[in-house]
Length: 213
Ligand SMILES: [Zn+2]
Image (cartoon, rainbow, N blue to C red; front, top):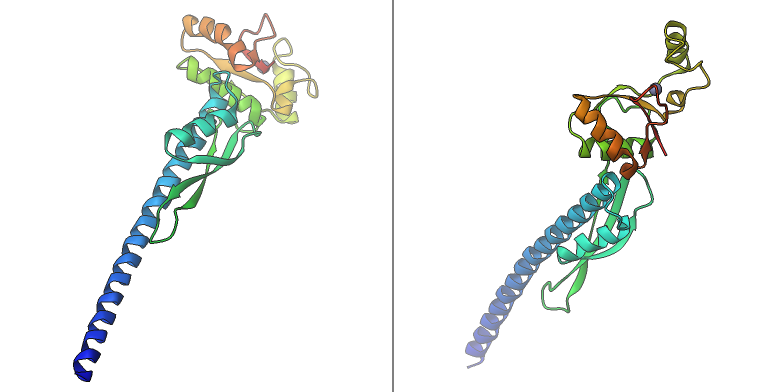
């Protein structure tokens, strides 16, 4: 009797352990799934916000980040949305993991606006504005972007009619670029679209020279 009772308790103990293991295993899988869901939402949020930097729709960058977090079942916790070329977000999803109450699982993501080719040395906000324009008008390219003082001096010496004296050009501070156009139509479209990207072609006799407004 005593032995049988002991055996029963032992079985119950084993079964209890097995049940606990099953809960832990499914809890681990649920936690991994929640982390993956949070990461996917963070990635979508950061990418959509960075897209807003490049092609502004008029919404605030943070609102876009929050919108895309929400569309992916997450909540935006914070957004570093004030940089011209980078967005970092943290989002949370609610997940029921194991036996306890549901809890928040967080993930972060960072999206960076890449400069167009030839855009190295340009100031980030200007490079992002150029990415905006390049997205609207296919085929544009940078002929000359950032120039050192020496490069500007050399250029001015050979083409004083086209290049400002060294120390006087916005190219030297990363705030001007000379664009190449694949066609006259593309040039006209670039001039038409520039204001929407915060850009201008301020020099009438240099229709390729572009600066931030
Ligand atoms: Zn120029």
